[in-house]
Length: 341
Ligand SMILES: NC(=O)c1ccc[n+]([C@@H]2O[C@H](COP(=O)([O-])OP(=O)(O)OC[C@H]3O[C@@H](n4cnc5c(N)ncnc54)[C@H](O)[C@@H]3O)[C@@H](O)[C@H]2O)c1
Image (tube, rainbow, N blue to C red; front, side, top):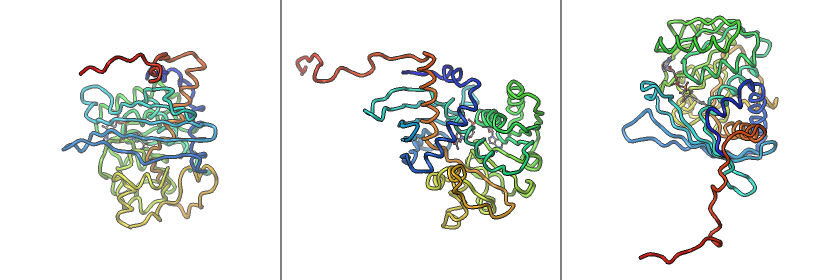
């Protein structure tokens, strides 16, 4: 089956709760170990620090029992020519015979799985806290999906503070948010600090490649930072915080802020646990009123879990294009011809 981006958008319309459940279940299965998740492989280009294409292979067992590969390109300069930064394809393979079962456009899946994961982290970390203010730093697709899933998961949100380096991006973000958020005030602010001091949950989804935030003393005690873009915060901030990650080995790579903190201390003791541990109730207690930072490297198991959901919905609703003769006739049955010299 071939599933296009717009088909996936339409299959997922109004299905935020289903996606949240899918991601939660994927994390729980993953934390119990019924999975295989090799390291992502980064393809970069000579003399080019910004563009990359990443391969994320994964297998996830139990209820999913699926395997696959996401191949996702990030070209931040695309925004300037009016196309999106990320583009992606996901291949789902049968675990019975290894054959590719579905090829899916995957920037939509990737954005939704990232945002749902951030929302689940915020809910798991909120404890008794009432969350009514959210701050978003970086006004692109990832934070747009993040606020969609945060508002689906946390119905008490009243105000949204948004900031982008480029004011135009913040303006268009506000306009888009007004189409999906009912009864939430949206305030554009002029500095990152205004987000930090006003919001109790703050999501970073910028394209910063090195840290640009060096203190967070303006944050409320007990605030939750969803560090989706992974490289905004200085290693000193990481070391002062309560750190939750998605996978310890994966996130200690590729010059993430967590990786920089590991390089500074030569240990990983500053990481309390994974989100899967929190969801399975096996995480150690938080020590004090530190700011909690969730740093998700972004796991391929989430892509195949949400990809599998899209595939099943497409089968149920008769969507997508079936490619009848994708696989060739077995070599034993092919008509052959003399080799030409
Ligand atoms: N951890 C994960 O699983 C995961 C998954 C998907 C994407 N991401 C990351 O999320 C980030 C955002 O993705 P996107 O698709 O929304 O990108 P995007 O290019 O659509 O938007 C990024 C926005 O951030 C703004 N920005 C850049 N630097 C900034 C800064 N210092 N302060 C404030 N704003 C700044 C840009 O102007 C732009 O509007 C990327 O870095 C991407 O790699 C992480």
